[in-house]
Length: 254
Image 1 (cartoon, rainbow, N blue to C red):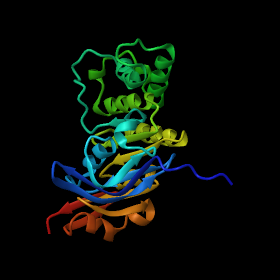
Image 2: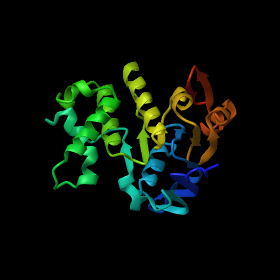
Image 3: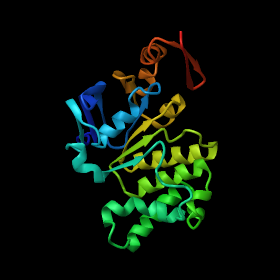
């Protein structure tokens, strides 16, 4: 029997700080190739902070975070990131195909022209999210859900070992949500590891093998079915009144 591949991402009692102020403590877990972990917790819990630390943009002041066995900043070219709010101006006159091709810039450099293979990879990524027919359209004319799919295609074109998604399902329509889920499944089948921040528990069940419960510290990390329990969720959401409405968490002050 062949040995299982080493984890793409390892977090070992990681403590993350802004300056001297710790904002996230005792995060511990691993994500292997072909697996996804959902970051679940209230607003301000540190989910985006953890993603930024995995990118090497925030310091780990105790413990460690390793990506592909190295410090995150050293392998950032192997990591793709889809932010919660992209900085790309929807009014900027750029086509959908050009946005996706931006995902290849780290491989080709900003001063070199994209090759035929770069364009093929970008086209294939756009096809993966179901928007191949919109390649020539201006990015800004797409709906919010379609723009999110294009940004995911941009990340896919980079051929990452690790993909980080910060609330990618917020405000997207059902068609876009399914396209995003399908693309995530294909990436996992190809061996990529994925970290996705979400408030939607159904996304964790549908797309992720593991869950990390966060609220300034870790309240659980493990298989989705055994970690997303009412008791753990109540602890994560700070002892406030909590109701599980379908697949969503509704929190009100007690």
